[in-house]
Image 1 (tube, rainbow, N blue to C red):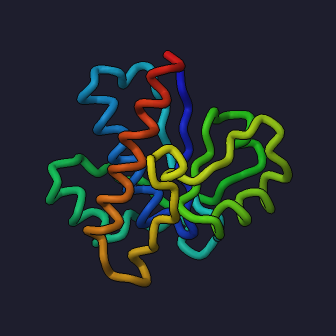
Image 2 (image 1 turned 30 degrees about the horizontal axis):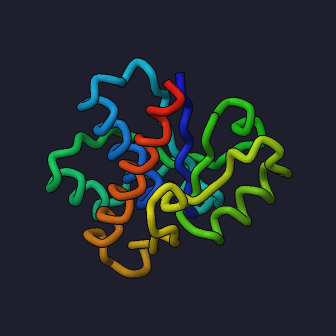
Image 3 (image 1 turned 135 degrees about the vertical axis):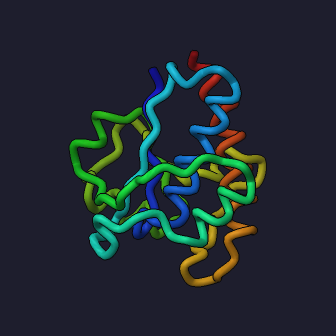
Length: 152
């Protein structure tokens, strides 16, 4: 089983979008039993809050089921629980490593590091652009799935 944890600042926009996009991709590929997918935050600001309405709206628009995830903060123990700890931007990676300590198994990376054009994914909390965030998340999740298929 491949275990993936998506991480952003608050765990209500980008990381939850990535969680549900990836779950949808593996479901459609008939691989749901081979994956465990979750998401978390680096901050405590949104702990317990639901998926942001902009993320929920965009996922609904794309026909992707969105569950009742509640924001939680990443914990040091998540490092051993997950195969991939995937941030959305460099700032997330710095904060992840502050919480996790080190990354000896090289599990920490950005989602779009799996794509042909590695880059940060902008936070729609600030930009208001959930469409572009969705396109970036989808690109990253599709590339990550390709990577994961090599491990199955």
